[in-house]
Image (cartoon, rainbow, N blue to C red; front, side, top):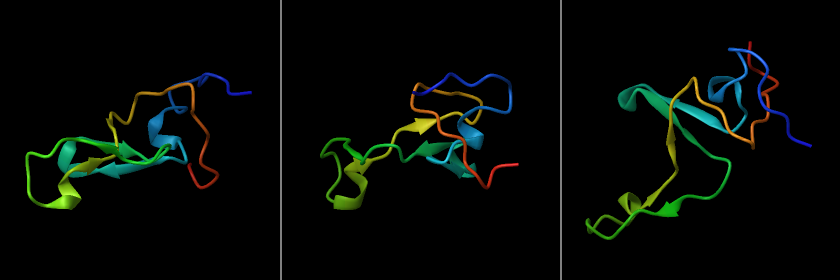
Length: 69
């Protein structure tokens, strides 16, 4: 069963599904496949997005990354 993070180090930053993205000030979550973000662009790659999350956030799907310090 999933458990909520227990301290400040248990957050998206230490989750196995998180990928940091400095350009957006947080990162993206790869827990689930990307979702359709709309057809406002003709570039197909821009239509599907992973959720943007802050590094200090957490969710009920949190899984500690074994490589996290």
